[in-house]
Structures are given as structure tokens and as C-alpha cells.
Image (cartoon, rainbow, N blue to C red):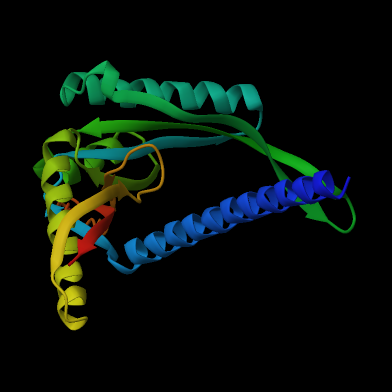
Length: 251
């Protein structure tokens, strides 16, 4: 009986040692993995590279509209429609602007209100408003076009946005600039740390929105009419920018 008891106890003890050994080995492997991950993190440089180009715009989007007042809504709308018809003919016939480059962005007929302590709030006439967005590519004649539109009855010219119509030609250039900027930053960091820069591990774009390349549109800055002189409109330049998050190996 004692002999069997000793044998069973020995088997149990051996089993405990075997399980304990496996647990210890597993713990050691886990520690090695954590240590390796720490080593990898210590050998990485992460930077944000910025790329920017200044380019002359090739298109302008102009907001041109007519606002008409009358005693009744019907009269205001009718008068406004007649002025808009004249404006449309000017844009299409005289200036040769295609129909696809002219679109309505706003149309409304609203009452005008007056207020007195005696009578309170009352309707005094109506305003009809119709606004177009006109795309135009001959930037040297923008001022002349605005003057002609004003002479034809346009009394609501709010702004002109200068932009680049086909942006695809500049995407690669601005990305290359951003990547070069990231490389300069990462090299400086590695040198300051007494290390050297290795291969690129990962690259991602940080730009918000659907388009990874941002093309800033320049608002009309200088519009001034002086007697017979035409309005002076200076398109200037627009900015093309992007940002890249770049991760490098550090040797």
C-alpha cells in the first residue's frame, strides 16, 4: 500500500513540475516578444512631411446675380426674369460662355418687412433674387466681364474664386515635395540622436476630405471701378498642398 502511494505521489510531483516548467517557458517567451516590440519602437522615427506649390490659376468662378424689388411678388419675379434673360444673353452670345459653365446657385422671392409701434410688422414690397455661378477661363478679361455684367443689370456680384481646373498634373509634384520634406526632418532627428536614417517603413496621407491634395481657392481681392476704366481683378496664385506621415527605420 505504501509502495503504491509513493508511486502515485511521484507521478503527481513530476506532472506538477512539467506543468510548471511549461508555464515558466511560456512566460519567458512572452517577455521576449514584449522586449522585441520595445526594441522595434526604439528604432523608429515618425515625422510629418509637408509639400506646397504656388501656381497661377487657370479658371475663375464668379458669382453674378440680379436682385429686383417691386410691390408684389409676381411683379418682382417678372422684372427679375427680364433682367436675368438679358444677362444670360450677354454671357452666352457676347462673351461666348458655354451653357455648361453657367449654373443657377440661388433663386428666391421674399417679402420686405417694415415695423412701427403703431402698425407693428407689415409687408412692404418683395425682393426677387437670382444668382449664377459663371466659370470663365480668360483671366485677363475678368474685370471687363464683370463691368459688362453690371451694365446689363447685375447688381449682386459677390466674389470671384480663382482656382486650378485640372489638378491632376500637380499631385505628383506636391507629394514629392512632402516626401522630401519628411526626409530632411527625419535625417536631422537621426543625426541629433547619434544614429543614421534607414529605409521607409510606412507612408500615409494626413489630408482631410476626399481629395488628398488641397487646392486653395483665392477669393477676388482687388475689384475697383474707376469711371470708364474697367474693374481691376488680380488672380495672383493659388496654393497646392498635402501632408504625409512617414515612418523611417533608425539604424
